[in-house]
Amino acid sequence: MGTDWTTPIKTADEIILPVSPAEVWLVLADIARYPTWWPRLLFVRLLSANPALTGTEFTIRPYGWRSFRCRVVSFEAPVRLCLQYEGGYMGGVAEWRLEPVGRATRVIYAMDAEVTDLLVTLVGAVINLKGIHSYSMRGIFRNLSRQISP
Image (cartoon, rainbow, N blue to C red; front, top):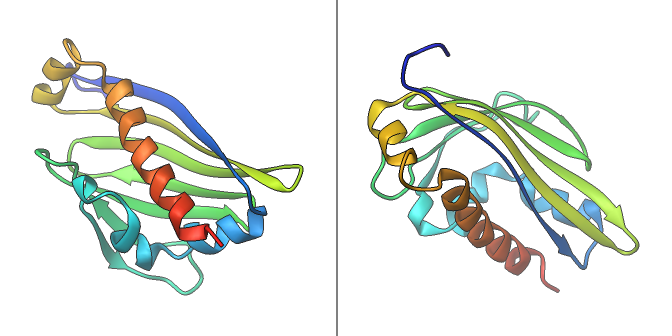
């Protein structure tokens, strides 16, 4: 990315859900429904849905910030869903990974991104951006759990 004011954010958050990877996959792969269950503070908006999943695009606009674009670049059902972050102030990659744990599933969201915005970089000097991301992920995981509850 290469500007003089960048902030790397490399993190992984996880939860174990009491259902199979296939059941979790049904919710994660239905990106058109993200706006209905992701926390409202993240303002998810579908831009284009590809029936083949790869190429599906959506934006995320965290409360108080500008939006950035996410695009599905690859997947392996029901194991992983890879995203590319681009545009706005965020670039990088993220991946949903699903790992069976007995009859349950470990859901991991790993991100390796870089913020390329002077204001966010300055904020990141005094606020833990990884902590903010993990806080957001707790809300996403909580809502994901509600989506798959029997």
